[in-house]
Length: 85
Image (tube, rainbow, N blue to C red):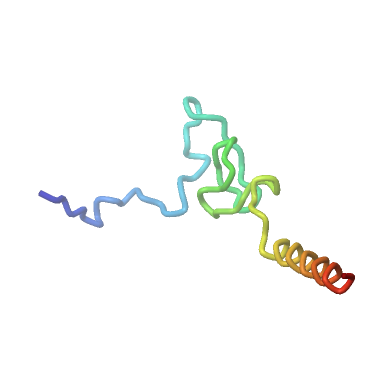
């Protein structure tokens, strides 16, 4: 038997998360503020669960622009080696 949830049951649901001033942090992990969206997040998170941004450059994957530069440099080196022979 499946239970269909009534949309009126979620009156307290806030898609943007709880208001930091209303939260009790006494028994939760250490928290910090996301530098991008300013919402409260767990201190050791790699990405913000609210906005999806990486919290540090070290955690972020290599961007497409960097891969493009690496590929272009590789192709130039291959062309140099090919024409040198």
